[in-house]
Image (cartoon, rainbow, N blue to C red; front, side, top):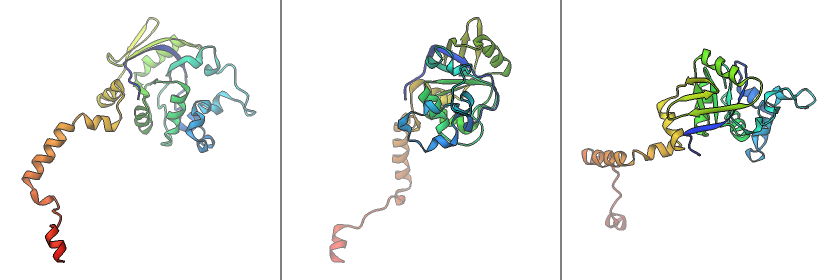
Length: 212
C-alpha cells in the first residue's frame, strides 16, 4: 500500500449521517470484477436519478471533485453490512481519507487494510469542517503524523488507533506488521523448543524405515 504521511489535496463534504455500505456501493454492482473500477459505482443511487442520469448538484459532480482525496461526513459512516467493496469504491474513486465522528467497525478495519485513513473527529469539529468546505471542493490538509486537519482557518485534531496509524504511515499490511517482530518471534521459537523439545516431531530414522 502507498504510505500516508500528509495529504495536501482537495476535500469534499458529504453532509449526511449514517451513510451505510449499501449506499456507498449498491449490492447489484458487486457482481462486477474489481478490474472494472469500483469508483464508478460510488454512491451511485444517491448521485443518479431513477433513469441513471447524474445529478449535477451532487458534490461529486461539481468541478474538480474528481481530484479530491478527502471526504468529510457525519457520524456512523460505513455502517451496515461488512462488504469490503464499499472501501474499494472509495479507493478506486481516488479517496485516501474519510473524516467523520464515527465509523462502522468493520468498515474502519477494511479501510485501513486498503490504505484508506478513517479519521475520527468530534461532532462539532466535523460540522466546522463541513461548513468550511461548503458545497464545492476546497483545499484540505490531513497530517497523519501530527493527527491534525486543516481547512482554511479551521484546524482540528483527529484520532485513530495507534496500530492503524503505524500501518498507514508505512503502507504496511498485517503481514508487514508481523515481520517487524521477526527477530523476537525467532528467539521465542528457539527458546520454546529448548524448554519443550518434545513438541517437535522427530521423523523415524532411515534405518527403522528400511527394517520395516
